[in-house]
Every structure is written in C-alpha cells, then in structure tokens.
Image (cartoon, rainbow, N blue to C red; front, side, top):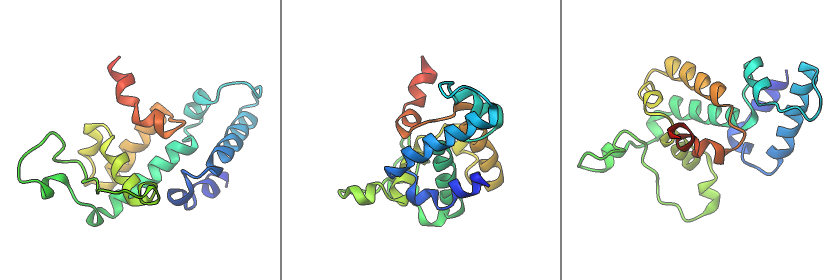
Length: 157
C-alpha cells in the first residue's frame, strides 16, 4: 500500500522539497520491514527487497510517461539534417524558466537522454523498455538525480 501512495503523481511532486522528507520515511519503513538498526544503510536493503528508492521511482514513472506519450516528444534526428552522436536522443527544448526546467517535459527529456544506449534502444517496445528500465534502476538504486546524472562516470572508472 505504501508503494501506491508514494508513486501516485510522483512525476509532478518527485523533485519537490518534500520528497527529501518522504524519502527519509521510506528508508524508515524499509528498516522496519527488514528489522535493522536505524543507522543501517538502506541501499542494499532496497535491492534485496526489489523496491526502488524514491528518486529511482521518480525516474521510472517519468520514463514510463515519456514511453507511453512518445508522440509528444521530438527526436534530434527530426530537428537536424545531419547525423550526430545524439541523433536518437530526444530534443531538449530551450528553456530559460526554472519552472519549465523542473517540469515533466523538460525533466523527462533530460533523464531519457542520460539512459544507457542499450536501454534507449528498447524505447519503442514499452513492455521491454519497462522491464529493462526497472532492472537498471534496481541495480543502481539511485538516491538522487545528481547520482543518476553521474552514473556513467562511475561505470567508466
């Protein structure tokens, strides 16, 4: 039941200041379920229980929104007449307002473009994309968007 409450509308409130408080509550619930000390790290517990941390759940829900609403998004190949490294990425619109940058559309494009290439290739098969995305997020168990945006750096080390 807690999962359905946490994930309801998360694409709209997942980056708000309240999400930090909710994440602490989520970690507290995980510690209670696993009957561990309050200072025990939850990262391995999330993986053990196959539960996504709040930011990973935000990424998952946002990417599923993007996958189910592909027609709302423009691919770079449709914008540029020449092939680039990121021609299969979604086109990131120019946005000066931070309200727009924190919105669902802009965040969805930015997060999608940071996904692993093999995961992006499953984008047009929603079922396969959902399954692969969930596995990727469970394996990495991201606690923050900064951690998500820097995951490629950690892999190459």
